[in-house]
Length: 264
Image 1 (cartoon, rainbow, N blue to C red):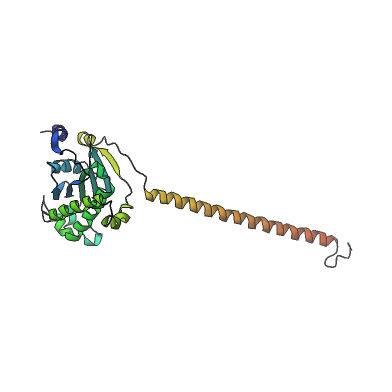
Image 2 (cartoon, one colour):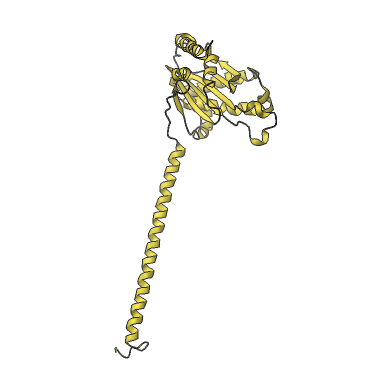
């Protein structure tokens, strides 16, 4: 089967029942951890064939840089957190090339859940996964090798869905500072991604980092302007003082300094 035919079949199945009917309440429906396009651990909350959608999205990701993205289809949103270098340089070994594609954490949810809760859940997934598995384990892992982590994903799905129902209190506040570091969230139409990877509509959201940089630039400009103003005042005062001294010396020379006897 050609790549284009396979893509069209995915779109048809997607439109005809890959996802269940929208849940009545906001919820996390599917969580997954992947290395490249290989799923390592998953949890599905009544969502059929969600792994097919996850694999299709993973195949379209740019794994060279860290990214936070949201793919939207009808009433569903698939949120993705990709870490290009999940382990510090000191933890990498000669056997670490198997994880060169980085790690991707994926959460499928009802669109009404918004983005804050799903991305908080993804950050929690990342933290717990990296605390549980080493670089060596990840680099040699195959498909669904970390099934023991499925239980953790199920607990996280329940926990963060409850956070939404409780107004995002509790643990959500603990990860809010991490969410403030989100530099970019891209909303993409999933049909376009499945049809052509090169035709992606991106909505780039301005971030707090850019706003902070703008404020810092304005403050620095104000300080420089004030410094230049004081410098001009000092220069003008010095020139005036020098002129007064010259005038005094010229007049005094004609009047017979220092006694001024010629003019008195």
